[in-house]
Length: 268
Length: 268
Image 1: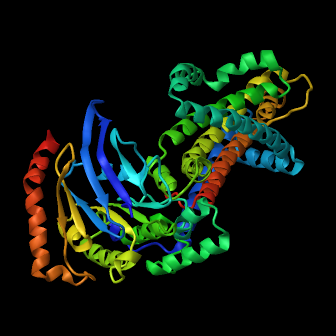
Image 2: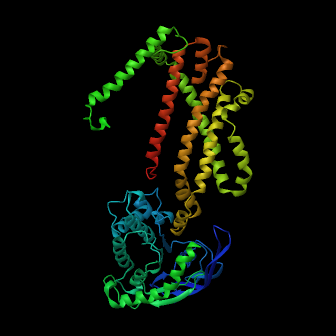
């Protein structure tokens, strides 16, 4: 069986919004994802993590190389690749129900079926009773859950998540991490799980969630390391184990110098 | 700040005091005008009240108001019909914007009222001249708001919709259109205020031409000219001014309500 996602010599250069000069965001990324794998992507700011996701999502076209999905090149966005955005990107004019039902509605699923599915998902993410609220009436954590339910409504085989938990407070984040693992199928056999590409700047979050952690180096983003996380699943209670701490330290060591450099370069 | 420490006044007193103050002021006004024999030049409260009663019971004011409002409504619709498509085109097509903007800006800087002589020359005094001026006044707020509205559409919401399986048509209908509504609505409110402001001016100008020629009075502006030159009724004039102000307030309050009602998700 071919891999679900294959990145071949992938590179992306875009014109800087400020100066108009070309900026090389990604250079020569080679990677394939196993089916049912949870891949976390970490790296210093400006390493092209988000660019990588938008190429796989099909929002942007690669400058060099290609993205293969099920063996075929990605030419645009599609419902089989669900996306969850860092700042939610919920439709402000749609209620929770209206947001969750959007995908099936857009694809022409019958009203009864899509409403039923939306109700299930809203219950699954714990938003029952808030179906008719608008996004601006929700807390950050609730918006995030709504965005997750919206993505899941299409039953995507690939979840593309761009720092989905960055904007919520620490306690909410820990709870959402556990919920995310449960929804993904942490307790199920690997064959039943969807494949995930999860961008984060939380190294402990990456180690907690992922089967492998992709470490990208600074601009242009290149694969610096691909760290296997051999921790047992379910993971929710592993936070305090020594193996966990060791892996976090290992990944941190890989990033540390460049992250420090990134702080300085950001000012320049 | 001695009054800050004083006990709060009872409700009855709080309502009664301003009423008494206003009553005394009106009385003084009335006495002053009568005593100085400036009647006929300076309005008196009793006269304004009497004309108000006469004009409302005879229905003259309502007829004139309906005539003006009808033209405002048609002009508003014409302004929307021209302004919204033009604004969308200017906002989305760069080359069109570059060639049209100087033209639109110079046209916009000509006050609608300045068109009245030309409008009378071309369209006559029967009402179409006023309609032209009103349409002209209403068009520009629509152009400006529509071109802004399409420019500030959140690209990530479009991405989100496409990743959920939305076709171009669905993106247009379910993302682009609703996201432009708040700004369009604000533009509509400005357009209506402009239209109402210019209809009075246009009718006044046209009224001067037809005053005393025995033609039918069609709008509030013409009625005011007739009142000034034919009837010389200063009290009625002031009553018209009050009526114009009340209608402006009512229109804007109504639209504000409607905006909150139709766009409950737009909290501003």
